[in-house]
Length: 280
Image (cartoon, rainbow, N blue to C red; front, side, top):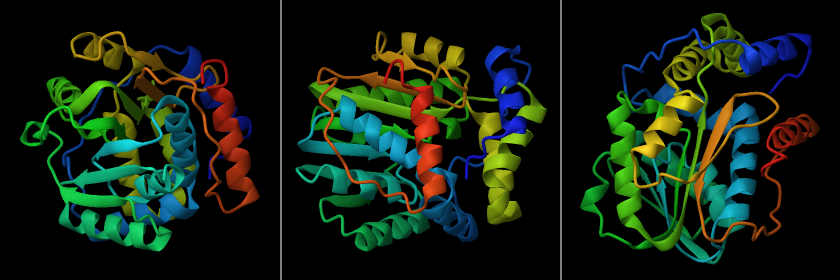
């Protein structure tokens, strides 16, 4: 769970106002290949902090994007987020992608568990989107995967591929973490959010924090991409996540049922929503 207490707010202030001292450390592996890691990732997407983040992503996509047509999700991972999004947008047909065979197996199982019949999963490299037919998707999402890019030009390559696949007037939505400003802050975030899933998941989460891009770095990359001028948002309360949205259907929010299971998760979700309240 996201834990809000004195320690949390101490690091929140450091993250908000402190200088950026932690340099980016790209992850060694761009693809999750360990099955134990995949299972822990999926568990956290159901019962942990990831489930809270997924709820916020769904809310934001429903506010920014179309409600029917074809959608592509880049690097879908465990498929839980996409399955929940597909249930929230039953008139849209979703295609999820990933490069890991085992993760695709987990994602298809997630879709069956949730009963999301309007989603399919295919094996697809996010750095080879040019192999798909252009201008066929009304919505393209890329969530919690950008930090797996080893180089800045890899991010631009995915952005260029997504832009090519998007229909004119379509919506592109990106959600990812922001790199903590210091090493101790990264460790504190991992301790607060990821300690309960075992050492493998904890270390992978810490590596992800260190591999994330700062808001300013992504802003520079967007300026070099076809999505220059897209709406780029970071929360006013806390600096843990960032959103990029290119959309012509902004503001068409539709209600959706919550997938959160506990009161603690729901409280965490509203705290997360509060951080984006001014712009989202």
